[in-house]
Figure (cartoon, one colour):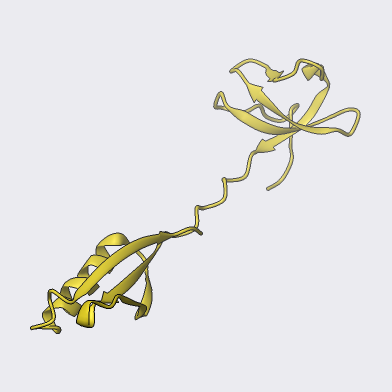
Length: 120
């Protein structure tokens, strides 16, 4: 992004902008449609010489879901993660479980699942 001189153009929208002043300081100020206003009022806005839009905020990390498959043979609980452990959504994890149950005919009462959302 390039700096825009206030002599050439002022923002068209009322929102926050990255600003530069005569003292060579950079800060965020709000353009209210007629003038820049700083949040803390310590920086006189009449000294702003340049401005630019703020960058887009970072994109959130995608969700990740882990399926844990429990097998209870002979009353003993063993726990192991499914080979395809990480899924992009809870629905994708549920679809996997439905397919796994369908392929485990006769073991329905011995296999249990837990879906866990993994922190990014």
